[in-house]
Image 1 (spheres, helix red, strand yellow):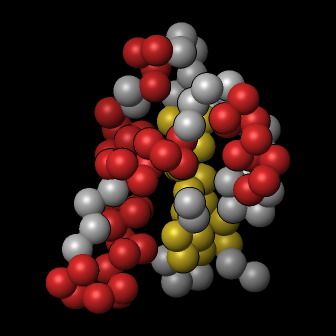
Image 2: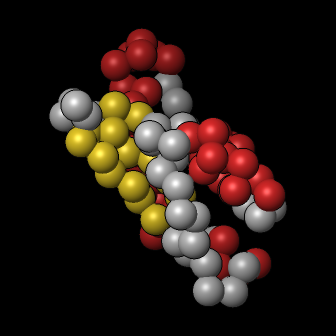
Length: 92
């Protein structure tokens, strides 16, 4: 779910999830699915990937989808008070 963009990784999460989708993926994913959000599946569905340029643009495609998900914030239509957030962590 996370994408490496040079010196940092980005991922999509929800505002209420106490775990990092980057460094605590298993706990994050368990919480996310137990709440019924299925964020990883949602991100996979909305990411527009192009194989025309190889794997070099895949990370950019995912980050673009994350930005779109945060902007549209469709989860708030179903779950009151919950929003999508972009998580950014520095790569060590």
